[in-house]
Length: 124
Image (tube, rainbow, N blue to C red; front, side, top):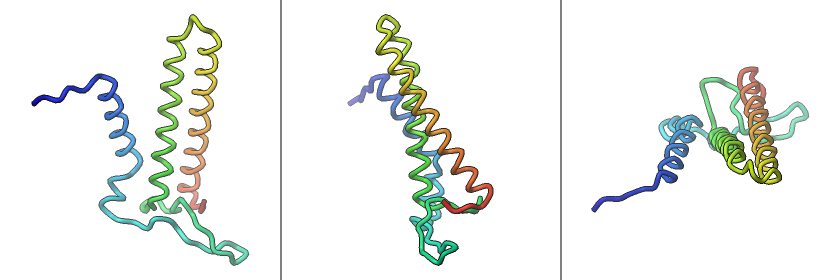
């Protein structure tokens, strides 16, 4: 019995595996880190952090956040690419382009904030 996948599903699987690997999921599977970081802020209140401020460690929420942001970035890129297929319909093309760029920019900014927090040892 031979299973035949369409090209569409092959692309989806490749992107899912790439996001899985780039988000740090292998580290989470092997090391079994804490799900989140609990810390006390300057006023003495206990808070929950999603980013471990050290380069060598990672928490599960950080992995899930990065995976979600990578997925959002990829969806934005796909929307930008698909917008050119609708060049005969300027309204649809413009909406896809603007929404795709917005998703890409927002996810890039949040990823930069997470990376900055990790490099400068800030807790988010």
